[in-house]
Length: 304
Ligand SMILES: NC(=O)c1ccc[n+]([C@@H]2O[C@H](COP(=O)([O-])OP(=O)(O)OC[C@H]3O[C@@H](n4cnc5c(N)ncnc54)[C@H](OP(=O)(O)O)[C@@H]3O)[C@@H](O)[C@H]2O)c1
Image 1 (spheres, protein in one colour):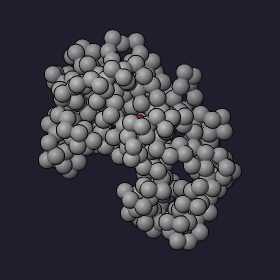
Image 2 (tube, protein in one colour):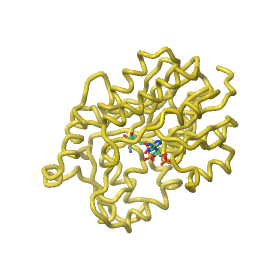
Image 3 (cartoon, helix red, strand yellow):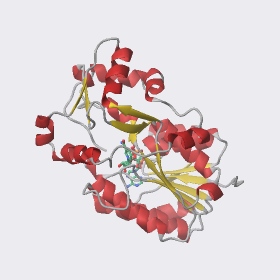
């Protein structure tokens, strides 16, 4: 195991993935830096109180990134993507490449880039996957020890209004007997912290990360048990797919086996033994958001 002790700069630390990574690294006793556009935001303040050093910066401001990277031993890189409606695919690509280039320039010894499980060698036709394919390809050309993790769908995302829990049902991309892999956001943090702890083992590797594999019918069983009432599962209806090209394309990718995830969960459990199954997540960290999702209402809000 590489005995690394220097600071790790975490991007996106006020968000889901970066937040989980920063907390897991602090928990592991590592020195953590974060870069945020708004150091006064509650999430940044909480990390500062937990021991992180907070840098004000922006993906649009290379000098701010250079400054935060100065003397950093390692970097966790994640960017937002176009389905959120705030940035373009071109911006995501430019930002992901910039972080990697500046990591090389400033002498960072290990870059961990978070991509997505649907990303592979070939374009998918979905902008927010193909952007990550381009960033991955760029990273592989660089003279830096890099690890690319590809998270599967976040368990947290299933609680969003629009998947039907507020109406006492659940709809997603699979048919009832097709399976997909999922990951709890906090497990992204634990896995990435384990990767940072062993640069020699993980440099040059790319792999999907997941904590559970579930078919549509598993959701019906688990949600019904957790809610103590029937929560039927069905794939998105033809009507929904006809009205929503984004969902229709993702559903087609599921049928092609591209969306499902291909994480080696036994290998990942050897690395982080307490990876959360969906059932455990639902009874623990996801309990409140599940209860809220059953009560929520709102327009379609799938964004990532
Ligand atoms: N949802 C899923 O199931 C799933 C699965 C696999 C991959 N993904 C990918 O995950 C990525 C999003 O990750 P996430 O959910 O962890 O993000 P998130 O929670 O939306 O957080 C976004 C983070 O990016 C930072 N950020 C945004 N614009 C910035 C800028 N101009 N300069 C510097 N920092 C900036 C924000 O920091 P400040 O606001 O503090 O500056 C924030 O910390 C997307 O690329 C998505 O495609 C999602």
